[in-house]
Length: 251
Image (tube, rainbow, N blue to C red; front, side):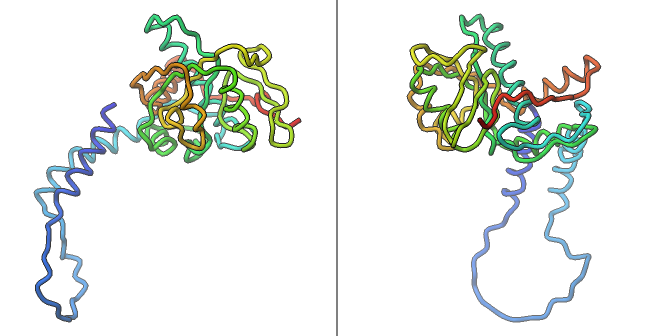
């Protein structure tokens, strides 16, 4: 989306305005605190101002209304569940539109990737940027049964994450009961997972995912797909309402 381009442009302009100084001499002098003094070139301000104002307007755009504050927690939470649900839906839609013979089994949204809570009431574009400040993109991974088991064991060991399409019981930091796509986990079959490129590359201690069988890079930013999901809910006249469903629980 163009929000990212504008942010990058502002950063480039900001850094390009810095003058390289060479130390020639050192002296001490008291300088009065004069509010009229400014280090900002007025021509630079004039150049950046239209972009900044446009960005501020975009960031204040209301995407959807939420019935309550959405915060993350473990083993599950309304925020992690909602984000994982949206990711799974987007993965399914992508496979259908791209005419891939794939139906994703589950989605994984890493807990640490969600940086803030979403407010009760109006949720704006700016709120989503605060929630997901990174440029992560949606990726699909094909995992063998043993790799999937290692993956879910890591989720169990740290007490939960953002997941959709599974039901996981955690017992003493290990996998208890595990269902994927409504069926008991089968170590002999393969599974398709929707996640982000950071996780797919082994980030957040998920190195086992480097042993995937196949990988499909979509080029779609998670932040963008969340924004589009919120817009769709708003256009349909619906508010955000999430119910905990016990997809991750302690045995």
